[in-house]
Structures are given as structure tokens and as C-alpha cells.
Image (cartoon, rainbow, N blue to C red; front, side, top):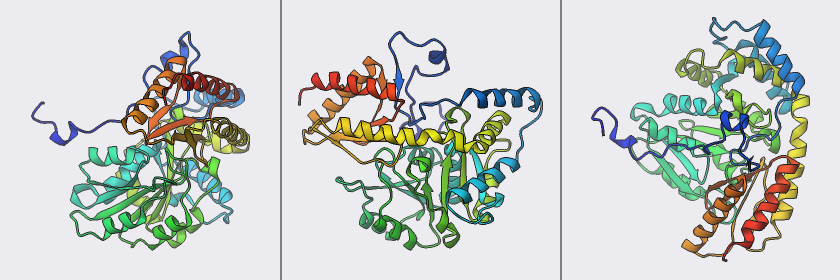
Length: 385
């Protein structure tokens, strides 16, 4: 290892997207029909009319020799209006100084970690399994990660273990708690008990509530933010708004928190084209979010059809994906069976995620879901259970 590199990064496992499904493969697809159901993207592209509008915006309004709007002023205003509307709040509850924008939610997570824990000021708490980037980004910054388990039956956070971890005298103390509502990969929303626990946490701990799947769940804690200045909500344009390629995420928080996030983010962090796409998307939200109900209906069909396999446990979902695992306690054989099923689906053209002790399947288009069920049946027939 080169002597100037940090030793602790050698063992860090990076986030690894599925290989071979980038722009090149979209332009020149493989002979086998590939259905990319492993990253919880929307299966629906922007309508052609909006693409044409975006193309016109790029041609007529965006000057490529100029930096983007570094303050994101118009987009922040549009987002604040959407938040108030979607949470049934008055129009002036959230305004631009409650909003910070990032190059995806990942950049916001990184900014939060820098603002709260960097330099030995704190550690983070996560409940596993959950979104892996909280831990990856923390470790990349040299920030300790404290992991607690979830209930093996319903995936609720082990609140006793979490409380004990926070109460424990440790250096550095826990300064940030990450939760997802609904959680990924398990698709469950925060329970009443979990919400009460979050409300009870002391003011010197920042509570990060990731609502990446809000458009599908319609569950939000935005109405409580004014009562909890130590809370911050994360959202994204990558899921319900169909803009995964543009990498636009946003946070909602107390103005003092927002001001710090604005200080630590990179200048001009969003390209002009991404800003324009997000603005067009949120201005046309009624049209774009029509696909959410179709995705939710397709999700129910997937759950119903997968539930016929008695060896598998299929969980209720409030997101655009479903999570299933084997019921039988086979030890290493169970892991082998899931790995084989995952590999066979991949070889037949359906990409899903093997994570959290089970399989996470993104809800695709109707035709993708039909193929998924057909391929699942064939792969299942080859399993030795």
C-alpha cells in the first residue's frame, strides 16, 4: 500500500453498482432482455414532451460556459411549495432557507456527517440492515459507526440496544442517528414506538429521517420538523420523480442546520442541466407522479404472486420495491440458496439485489414484472430446499 494512503480505507467496502448496465449497455443492449430491478429506480422515463422541453431549455437558456446557479434559488422555492402542499401545510411553513440541495442524497449525507461528527466530534448510529451509504460515507470520513440490530420478525429497530448505545459513555459520543422511512431494503415504515423514541432523543443528537420513498408511501414527518430543530428530512428526485440520472436530492431542516449544510457543500454542486430537469419535474409533478399509483398496484401484484412460494416470506412494502427471504432456517444452505436464486435471475436477465439476508426486488413496469415472475418460477424450480 502506498504510504500516504489511509490504512483504515483498505478494508472499507465501497458501494458497488451492478456492472454493465450503464449508458453503453442502454445504447447497445445485450441480446437477452435485461430488467434492471436492483436499484429502486422508476421504470418510467420522462414523457417525451418534458424531454423536449428540457432539450429546449438546454439549447436556449443554459450557457455551458457559465457556472450553474450556486444558490439554487428557483428550485428551492419550488421544492418548498411542494413540501408544504404534500404535507398539507400552509404555504409559508417551509421556505427556501429550510432547503439544501445535494448531488443526490449521498452528498447531503456527507455534508451532515461533516457538520456533526468530523474531527472526532461524534459517531453515528444505524440499525442494520439499512441503506449502506450511511456507514460507507462515515467510514470514508474516519467517523465511527455504531450498529444496532433490528427485530428479525418485523425489522423494527432494537430500541433498547439503540438507547443503551446512546447512553453508553463513549468517545466520541453518538451525534447523528440515521433512519429510513420506509427502510431499505426491508420496506417497512417507522412504527409508533420508533417514532416516540426519535421524539425522545436529546437535542444534542441530530436525527436524520430519510424519506427517499415518500412519493410511494405518502408517510412524512415534515409537519413535526418545527417542533424538533434536531431533525432533518432527506428526499430525492431519483425515485418518484424519475430523475435518477440527474442526481438531485434535498434536505428539509431548521434554518440553522440548513445554513451549516450550505457552508460545507461544494460550490456549484448541481449542474445546470440537473437543476433545469428538477425544476421542470416539480412544476409538472401532477403528470409525473401519476405513475406512482401504477407502481403501487404492480407492487401488490408482485407480493401476491410471490406469496405462493411457501418457503419464502414476503413482507409488506410502503416503497417501490419488495423484500423477501427464506423462512427455513438452513444456516449456510439458506445463504447458498438465495445466492443461487440471485445468480440465476441475473443470468436470465433480471437484476435484483441480494442484501439484508434476503432479496430486494424493485417494482418494474408491468411487462418487467411479468418476466420477473416467470424467471423467478424457473429459478425456484432449480433450487434445492
